[in-house]
Amino acid sequence: MPASRPIAHTLSRCLLAACALTPLAGCGLFIVGGAAAGSAVIATDRRTAGEQVDDQTIEIRVSSEMNRAFGDKARVVGTAYSGRLLLVGDVPTDADRQRAESVAKTIPKVREVDNYIRVGDLTPLSVRTNDTWITTKVKTDLASTKEVPFRTIKVTTERGVVYLMGKVTSDEAQRAGIVASGVTGVNKVVKLFQVVARESILAEPGKPAPVVTDSSSTGTPAPAPAASGGGVQTMPVH
Image (cartoon, rainbow, N blue to C red; front, top):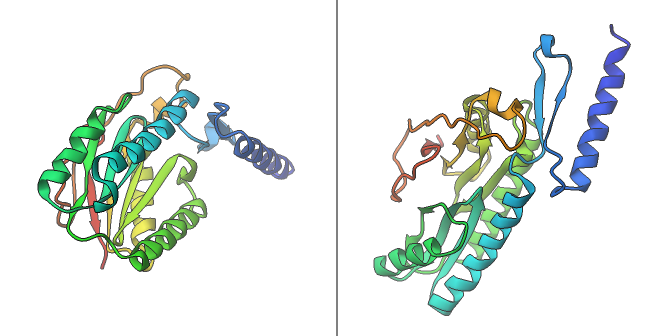
């Protein structure tokens, strides 16, 4: 039925626009196309509205607690997804690095911590500015790539290393990693995804999603310990 395609396309664009206007309203997922035709799952954010609020609160608390603990002697940035907290930045000593992780673990709603904080001098502003550009470029490229649920993927860049977080299938994780590694200036991609079965994404909201642990990696792992959950994958950039 060729005539139905423009209508379906227009409908899908309208639905996406509606969800973009209400990011915390629990817009959830929709399916575009017929099930028999191999439907594409289009995600807004696969976290619940409550999880999104909790993650925002965690990130604010990290900023406050790290400032209280280190002042201007260190720079620690936290990114949270479903209670999984990524820490990056710079601290003077390894003892400070461990202290930052201990402080982070006391923050309510934090389930686990991926500590990728670097020991050394503060990263220059010029490098951080370039990292911001890389993050923006990665997000743009993810958004323009088919079969990548970009709205549910968080991107963090630190000294040219891109960290990807989110709830994705193994195929989506692979595609997202390839896209990020192709961006100019990216030295390595570290995937901190929660990898789930595709069927769980289509399941009713509120039901627990079976997690598929994927701990395989390529290249040299980052110095931080691998966290449980979705495993850690690193992708070197050639």
